[in-house]
Figure (tube, rainbow, N blue to C red):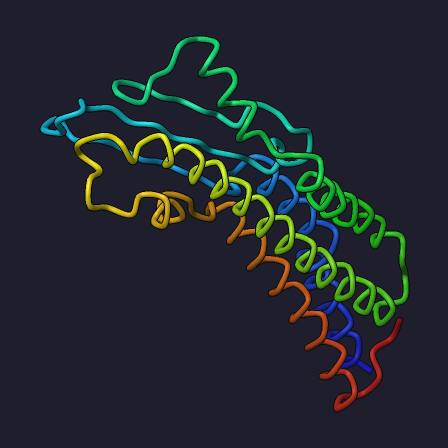
Length: 213
């Protein structure tokens, strides 16, 4: 009985972090940290001029379609109206936002797992929620990166006539300036780890004395 009680306490401690508390932390990381980024720079010796342009889209931007953090300077700087128009272009579209909203909704609903008293049921629900959220997150990221690549290709088509781009397939290489943000990777890794931990607890419980609910 002492072993069973000790195992029960251990499971409860693990499920605090691999459950609602963990989901809350991952949700905050997803909303605050960059989900996708894009950047390009021209060095000082560039015949067309130096400058840089960058975009950073957080999870919150992905959900609400907010300001993506578009900045441009030097040769990449446009008129105030042009900069505003470009910021709108890289702002997540509704088709992309839908998956971001679904990801946040699933993770938010997962916080209600704390109301489940039976630990096995809690483990099953947590594993399912984390798995579904991870799949939705990957789809949202894929669509977001695809949108940024599309915008980068459109911009590249205006650059093919510059002297410094002659002989370079700037349109074909536009995807090289776009990347996934570390907020995406941290959130995805956390969700996968959370699902794995709860599945491990379920599998391990089959080979041990029954843990009190």
